Length: 198
Image: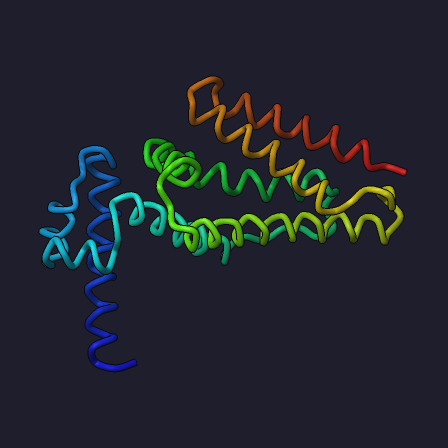
């Protein structure tokens, strides 16, 4: 890495740290690019060039935090499939639960915000990785004779992801308390897995 690249990365790190701190302390809506630039000790234009928009900063910060937490995530490979699924999805729910206001903005920007095709592609790649994990678990169950062979792993993983997304959006929209939704998610996963049995 050249000196110029190191300097650019150092400024981006300061921008991201300033944005995360401001988003968490005063809220996403009350944070401006100017405040981020002042906290990071860089020009407003530098924030825009290196960090992008406020929404882009929030999304990249959430994605980085999720990726950091995923490094710590472990699942008991011997646990029943419904338990592995629940533990995996609840891992994400716990992350969002720690900062619900930012999670609402993150989901809104991720799902409905103005994103470039490249940003959308990166998000789809993350979702595909999760669905690949879930598909792999089903394939293992099928090979062990604990799940019907005629169930398509990709369709199964999409169904599980839809249950998770419904849970997350119902909570973020304030429709139901998260703990009630966790219980519903668990029952939904149990019913889905039950339908797989040979």
